[in-house]
Length: 334
Image: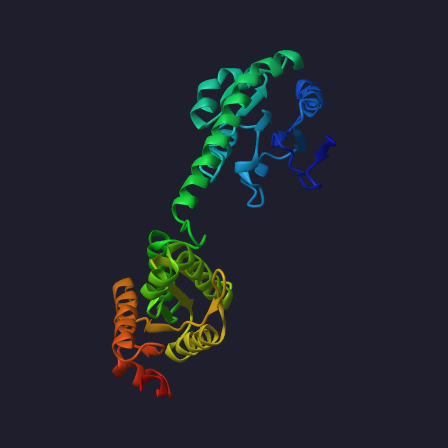
């Protein structure tokens, strides 16, 4: 992989070790350490403004380290470092400050702000590399642990069978979308659905085939949703679909569309195929009305139960009186 020193007007190309920022390389040791970092496999970017640390385009979590050339008011520089440390992903990034006597005398100030190491400007590049070794090593371990924990958290929010968000993730998404609907003053709809008589599939074909049907059904729902909607598996053959900025008519139309697809396709079963149907319960919350997760999901669940009781393979909206007043067509209420 090619390693080079880039300047502030050039994009940072990520290396496996992560990029290193060298800011205000006015001291010779900083100019001479850049090639040594490149030789180690780091992608080095030189820039001449400490404000780079506060640049909104800077992805702090990707950084392997930051070198700062101290050459200005210590209070202002310390404040920049403090603000950098507050940014997402900056906690585990090693920050090394190189400066003259002004920096050395204010070591405690810079350390309190978040600098890990303050180094005299007359330090040799080789000694500087030796000093930063443990910091960069621990920084890499921190990033690795952080990424592993993030992956574990994300994995814990996914359904193992379908790869879709699970019930826990759905609950978080529903709360977030309800709050967003409240803020922007737009409706939010929810569809709860499951496969009709799914128990018979398991009994006749076995659990492995039943799992295959669940995966196919989940994939179908996921293809049908819009990019900014969310489909989750709640458990068994039951799925939930959050529809952002969708009124009752739009939500019911979406449910009817998928209901038709389910009814017309063949589900692949070993060694053959089978036709199935599904029932859909729909609800909507509006700002100023019952704007809560409990109303949204609870009403969709009631609509699903109503659909099962009234013959299955249908789309039902709940509550019916509100639906009559909110949409012009109520043919789906029959």
